[in-house]
Image (cartoon, rainbow, N blue to C red; front, side, top):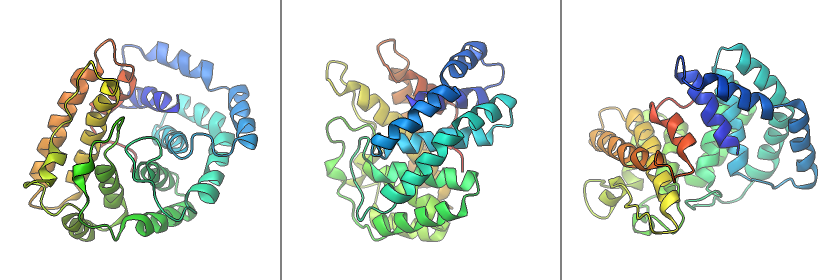
Amino acid sequence: AVHSHWSLVRQLRLFDEHPRESAIERSIDARLTSENVGREVAFFADNPAFEKPYGWGWLLRLVAELHCWEDDRADEWRRTLEPLEERIVELVEAEFLARERPFRVGTHGNSAFALQCVLDYARVTANDHLESATLETSRAFFAADRNYPVEYEPLGWDFLSPALAEADLLRRVLAPAAFAEWLDGFLPDVTEPPYDALLEPTTVDADEDVALHYVGLNVSKAWCLAGIAAALDDHPYTEAFERSAACHAECGIERAFEEDYAGSTIAAARRRSPRRSPR
């Protein structure tokens, strides 16, 4: 999966002398080949909606991660991915940013999460046209949102919080003062019901089928909460978001590294700091 490759690359970039560096490098070399990438590009010729938009976002996040890393291996892997990168950018512009309305789900179809990935990629790679188009779509989708119905979260199988994914996108889109004003209207008071529930980690029951996704939900919420807190300048809720981010990270990571959890590779990359995604 592309997000697993992002996770491995991010670990190599952030952690010096990674204990499994050689094994990770061999694994990526074996998969990121010109032949494999060519087959992926060819597949999209007949299946242009494949993995839309979640996989598209992760592919661009992987490319952005490689772009940020000053390393010969990153340069080589980035060159190998270029044909697929170009195809995904074309599809994003033609098939995703042109949507009339967003998907506000907590799973793969979530529009806000994919827009985060696209916007970060556009800024990291200095793609001004894509950045402008992504900002326009983000504002059209979410800038007028108020009084989010937080009672609906989490739905079954959620691994993203639609509310926090949206807020984490808008803090990238709006200037700090405008974002703080928007957040006050979107989540009017996170210290009082019902909005305070959003700052509480989701209880994970190992016997439930949704356990794996709920572990991921706590980790992804930590990522969003930390980013939101960092974007708020002397806001009344900054400390609440910071505390909640730490609590979610602790709860999520504790379960993510158990042997029966398949998402441990993603959690490992997010473990160091939720704030250090490409900007």
